[in-house]
Image (tube, rainbow, N blue to C red; front, side, top):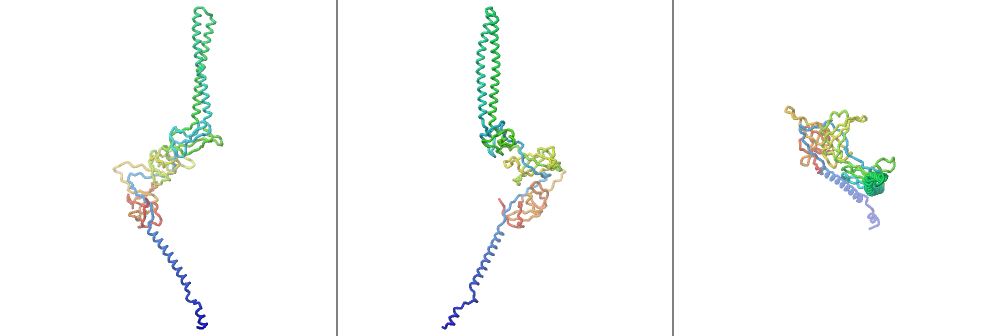
Length: 403
């Protein structure tokens, strides 16, 4: 073999290009894998049904009262007190914490009672001295009474002079006056002991009524006073107690609609914190004055359902209900319907859940009663509807009902 043939065998064949062809197949394979993954994810998303909340349509009887007025207000307590001391002193002990339940007469805090105890000890000592003087004076008076009796007998027998009988009488009368004065001193000493005892008792701060502590305002070592110290560091209260049994609702009603509200009118209250909880109530009174700046009239509403979830200053929505009409033979029945949550209605459409799927149902919606919506036609009592249906929900779609 000559040299030219050997050089031909060493030449590189550039027409085959096997490395570039291998890289191109790798890119194509990666693209196919990505497309397959995206398709699988979309298929899984379509096969996985969304989770929805549902509510049951409630029957709306012909005599069920409807809402004539909706207004917003707040939960308030008619019995609430910031507990303070009757005297100025330094706090030595605080026994309350926020959220604690206390009963009437329970000790909430104590003040420094060193001075009060000293005053009580002094008053008791003065009472003891006055009482001991009374015994001495009574003994002297008894002796003076005997001396005067003997002097009177001797004077009657003309054995002593008139001066002697006068001296015995004066001694007796003097001791009688001293006894009366000492009796008043003993009474005054007893009053001093009572006052000192009251001052000592004032160092103990007790609950004026049963309730729940909502605010703790003082700590041991701080000064407390029943009056403001004028911008100093003296506290004016130990804490605030609320009687939860005195909770009610206060609503500001526009004066243009106050004619729709009457005493003892039934209401339905909905707390902002629990929108699905309907609380029955009734109107206590309409405060006979208007707020000029807001053009509103304050209305007090009683809460008929006591529950620990209801706390002061909670926002609440109140639906004033019309009274049920009296039974009458000639009265024509009102059209029957159902009530569903207001956020279950999308325009004039609701989604009814049955056997794990939803059906798009066109309905005739009526007026709103609080957080509920009246459905006049297209829906039956007992059917379950989707609450706040997602935008992607369609007719016939599969869903999972949240527990």
